Amino acid sequence: MEIIRSNFKSNLHKVYQAIEEADFFAIDGEFSGISDGPSVTALTNGFDTPEERSSPDVKFVCQSSSIDFLASQGFDFNKVFRNGIPYLNQEEERQLREQYDEKRLQSNGAGALSYVSPNTSKCPVTIPEDQKKFIDHVVEKIEDLLQSEEDKNLDLEPCTGFQRKLIYQTLSWKYPKGIHVETLETEKKERYIVISKVDEEERKRREQQKHAKEQEELNDAVGFSRVIHAIANSGKLVIGHNMLLDVMHTVHQFYCPLPADLNEFKEMTTCVFPRLLDTKLMASTQPFKDIINNTSLAELEKRLKETPFNPPKVESAEGFPSYDTASEQLHEAGYDAYITGLCFISMANYLGTFLSPPKTHVSARSKLVEPFFNKLFLMRVMDIPYLNLEGPDLQPKRDHVLHVTFPKEWKTSDLYQLFSAFGNIQISWIDDTSAFVSLSQPEQVQIAVNTSKYAESYRIQTYAEYVGKKHEKQIKRKWTEDGWKEVERKRLNTQCASYALQNHYHHANSLTATGTVGKRTLSPSRAEAGLEARVSEELSDAELEQTDSCAESLSEGRKKAKKLKRMKKDLSPAGSLSDSSAKLFEVPDTW
Image (tube, rainbow, N blue to C red):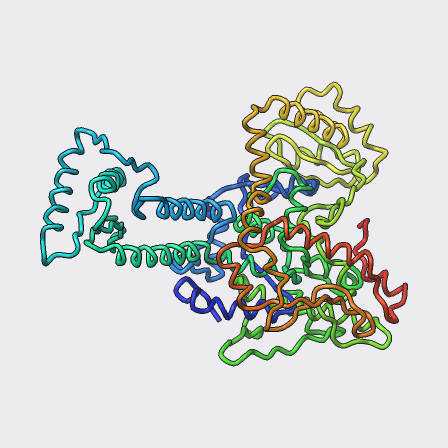
């Protein structure tokens, strides 16, 4: 079922129901990636650290190669802008709700009218000379309206925001009762003021309608964020293929700007999505890596239809047509997410064949798939295969790696010639004047460094020296930063936490109340020979609707993440899984 702007609101309850009934979610954002350098290798190289690979880069740009790729895959760009569903992140939503609450407080104040501007004065307004004629003309029209027995409404001509402000301020003290003032929009998005003659009862009724409309418009502005919040609040497993970019964009667009610190990013991500699984990493790890040669999504989906795997049979619900894998629709986000889910099911069920007796179906809550949780595949990093969201990342030995600086005119062939005496090498470009060069034998590193001591056109240093100098520069740069930048950084890092207080005030206990729809499972129990991890919680439609006005706070998400971690630590899997088989499912600490 395709959900776009025009049918989003009418089908939102179906989306909530699907979230409630789902065992797991498969996502794909179709983020093809944009390079701001001469090539992809200039954007990412094989010796990036996780900090460098996850650093935020806020841009709205178009790149011809990326656009060409999406166009070749049939991507409908018009559809994005015409039918795309709007959304707000948490800070934008908070600001919008604060404006709405402030407006309501003013409207409920003693003697205040709902249409009064925040800067409204209770005494005659000082009107600029060039606007006096305009305001006098408006007042004359209102006097005529009040004296007319036939006319009930007056539509003023569209005007500027400053002129509308002067009108509101003037009418608030000149006509404290008997009229209702409201700003509307024409089809051309021009704003104009409508003035109506009303009694007090009618005025209150109209104000209630206005508040209800504003609340609906606010929820419409939150838009697709309501779906993301509902998925995050469910605590269920979210699956993607090579999903680091998907996760980063989702957190950034729907929650908070990404922090510069890697550990803060990890904490923020696990608070939003307590359980993530990357099928590309899963397919690259034992017991799959020896029997799966190509982990690209299309090839993986084909391989998992063959022996020894058993692909799942998919039955679509009535009225909800599904994709047909026989006719590929690769790089359509919905299709890619669909086959990502199929790949996970096939690989998870394959793990069940190692049990005694074998098990044909392994759920998303099984202890068998837990070793793959919260580890995101890192592309084009030679010796750090994944980003570990739940702990420190792998620390590879890079004592065979050199950092080389050279003239801009140099090419790859020049580097190969420079290191020709050192056997096989591997080059990872950083920019036009520097690169990493890895040698096959670490003991040759110092010899290579010594050769550059008296060279004029190039310099060679060990990887450790390069990292040390880079760290020193970062510390000096931090020392010289202006104080306001530090304050701003702290504000960005804590804005989600501050939003949590308001969120908790509006939606306390929204996920702990007893519901009537059904149960969902999250953490380990003894059912099915102790291999299934379950915790029963009940969530009603009414509670899911509460995500319309506000997402669950990140502080609540943090508590939920810590709770899951405690459960994982305290409960160990039962059953007949042998120690030798258990080792097969562990993501190695060294690669």
